[in-house]
Image 1 (cartoon, rainbow, N blue to C red):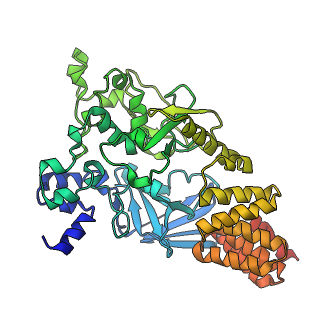
Image 2 (image 1 turned 45 degrees about the horizontal axis):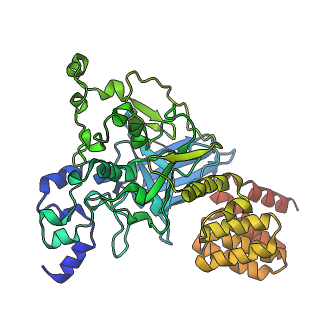
Length: 495
């Protein structure tokens, strides 16, 4: 084989490399939801109005436009972004993604849902007045369950491929044979289940850290065949499960709490019922249930695993994998954004006491945002920035400065640390130093509303009214519900 061609194959995750020998399997897989998990955008059009945040959205071609209307009908606070990527197969939904000029992936607030012939609505988690609009960054932790392993050299994320379940294919491509690639069907049932649950187990989409990776484990370091507990541990709310909470990625979570699974002595796995190469469901219930009712039934899932509307994504209906004799439930009328303040406990994987303490610290820090809570978190650029910002709020300026500088040394473009340091400089009269820090933040994150607000405050302190007004208006354009920016602009205009 040509050396350059071999290198391209070795670092490529395309199922096309498997097709010469496994055409039927590859062609079937590419029609599944996993095989279509990420795609290029297709031109379309549509519009809708989100009443809770008073914003109009319109899609034309491959662009999303957001605006608000003045009383006379003129558009204001217009933001327009290109659609550069689509996450989701379309079986349930497709969420649009923008790639910024800095290479960051941003989730767009608009999603296409397949129900009722297809319609546009707010993306899951966005149906609220204070949603993130165009500001939610998609990181590797988000992509882990939606994309193939990253390519070398780096490129845009690709749809889930063969290597996500069969492991690296380099040796197999070099010398095809049965012994040099993983066949998940040959794994013990527990490892087969771990492979599926590495993506299909989420105990909660909000309120708690549902899982924590073990120290030293990178996001994409999990390999098919290894124990899930050696990669990350899971946690759940300390309430009698499974209750009525039903979320969009609850297939594995609900299955593990089913009597059918618990009484199977580990024999029941996801592939007992699902063919991963075709996404076709098998009628497997008869293997254990031999009653006349089971034999006469054309399909068990319709009654015992009904489709339900997810509480965190109300525009989709998913199969409830908590298998029950007589299911009973109420459909949610809207997304549930109520915070959870209760205790958390280990779930499925056994948890080291230190990791359980870390999960509880993460939950508390998200809720309280004090220096005490942030001190309990591992040292990273983001955690140090949050700690420094909290110290600044609490008046501990000396320690705040040291902490923020440590964060900046780890990540020179982090907007939280740069803004907090700029505030420190500005309040001590060093306005030029503050402006330099804010300009660094603006260049790296031009859509960060707080950076523009602080630019406005600093320009106002320097006596440049016009520059301040422009900065405040840009902050409001990017985040129309930013009360602090509106107040500063109104006060400056009144003066």
